[in-house]
Amino acid sequence: MYLMVLDGEYPKDIRVRKEAESIAESGREITVLTRWSKNQARKEVINNVNIIRCGPHYSFNIKGINDILSSVFFIDFLFWLSIKKILKINNVRVIHLHDLPLIKTIQTLIKKKDVKLILDMHENYPEMLDEYKLSKKGWLKRNKDALFFNSFRWKKYEGRHIKKCDHIIAVVDEMKEKIIREYNIDSQNISVVSNYEKRSFSHKEENDDFTFDQTFSILYVGGISPIRGLETVILAIKKINKHFPVRFVIVGGGNNQYIQTLKNLVSENELDDCVHFIGYRPFNKINYYIKRASINIIPHIKSAHTDNTIPHKLFQIFLMKSPVLVSSCNPLNRIVKSNNAGYVFKAESPTSLKEMIVHINKNKEEKTMFANNGYDLAYHKLNWELEAKKLINTYDRYHG
Image (cartoon, rainbow, N blue to C red; front, side, top):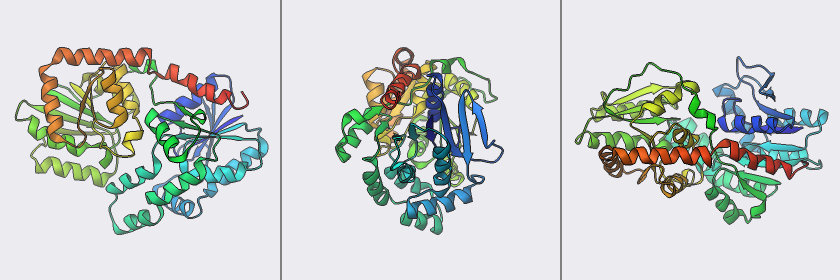
């Protein structure tokens, strides 16, 4: 039996779902241990993936309390109990962990067992903590994060425990190189399994009630937080409007206080008629927006986190044969530029973004060519059907 451990929701997490289903399709018995949330079954099977959900209802308050306790002792007691029970009654060969904070929890349980530990590093966790603080409001939250969730503390934790893993999975080459450089880990023990999308993604589309007219439209789809760079786009809109009318459509949710900050910025710049906050939309309706936008944008700020990760949405946009404009974060810049698959602007620069949008509007044939290049790239090379084979090969190294 192979066990995946996720401190989040399944099957909501796109990467974990694709990985688990690929393992199941390879003929292996795979179980995902995850948090329980209200209205979810404690146990169920989805697409041949066994799911076990542990703990009480995963409410915001319970998560906060559990996170503090876990950060004090570096042991998550809810997961510790559940994993111990699973190990007792099952012949677990590999534990595939998706969350850095749970490393010590698992390592204490498998210390004297023949169980291999694979760490899947979706994110640059220590640096990500600093960026999440930007959206936190209130004295209590800021001081709690400063004490328990500061990047220095978790960087030391990462350094102590990452070397004890049998294998590490990174999402981009930049992250692999960073791990080798900082922790002197053998490159043979690190695989890159990226956030590529299934080819079939482009076949899924359901209409939604938002109407795209002839106005040049910039679309952002995803989570809303300071690291996403949406302020840069809003400030650029005012500059672009001096050249031609433009609409900025934001699809997604996030911290309500930060969303209000963005809405205030829109109003301060008299852009209420140009910027549309659609809110969260179901996954099966996302393609409706991607397909109809004049340009899709990934405007992330440049940081130690965004320079070592890659969002799923880039490859979803490629597979929809839609044009894309990205900020100059290293992985985004590398993939888009080296394949002539879209446009790049200087991160956090409204002026650079404005200049690129003006250029795109004047060069419609080039925009179409880049969109076609992106589609060909994703369909023939950068897709999950091919990437899943790397994951299977990693599993083959440990008990077959």
